[in-house]
Image 1 (cartoon, rainbow, N blue to C red):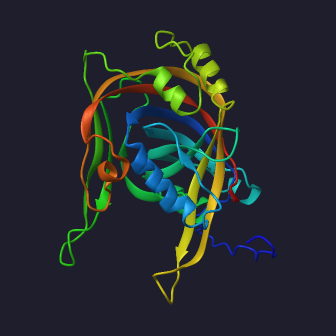
Image 2: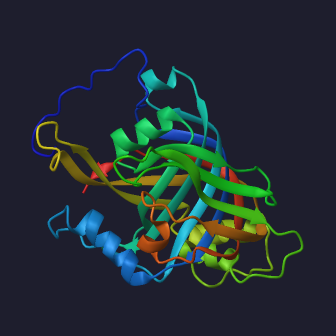
Length: 303
């Protein structure tokens, strides 16, 4: 905490919360810009940032879209010397980010709403260190623009005291071969991460996409998350709570292409009310952007 010297973290031999900063090589990402209800997005900003900060931070939801993505990280490892010596792990991830404005200028900023990962260390490091709302789940994602299926399964709860939790599908995107053209392409996704409307959907060269990413914050995005731990004595309260800002930087973009058309479904789950909270359609068609590259994920900061 600010204003006092922090104690040293006590590690274990089997530690799963790896120290930042992180390197993520071989990231293969499928991104989609889905229409959402701006008032509901603003309500989430107020709930997870403005409220916990006592009104000191007031992010403003931008537009009426969210970024939904599936990503396969070929190699993830820590840059911290001790943890770097422990090697690397692969992981797959599904997420939903809300574009927000916080202050003036700077890189594109997102409030992280959902993150599902298939790796225990990725979950622990994300939640315990950076406060990202990561949970363990199953993620289906391919390393080609035309992957036939993109999907995420989660452990659902909320059926009542006598109902067991169960693994169920949360979202699935199924490729539609030769499907009709769907609005939403390079311009939508680049625009969502802070770019402008100069991107030509017909120009899918890596140079065109690199220029779009450069206009969108020089390849850097900022993420907002609420880091908190429930108090042991009074579980209604948090023994620690802070808004954390972290940054991801694209350090190498090797490939980019349109994803093609997908028919998607977002399943209604009591424990994962994406449709209700975000105001997105439960079914529809979407087309997005596929990218391959490397990322540096920097250490976070309390704001």
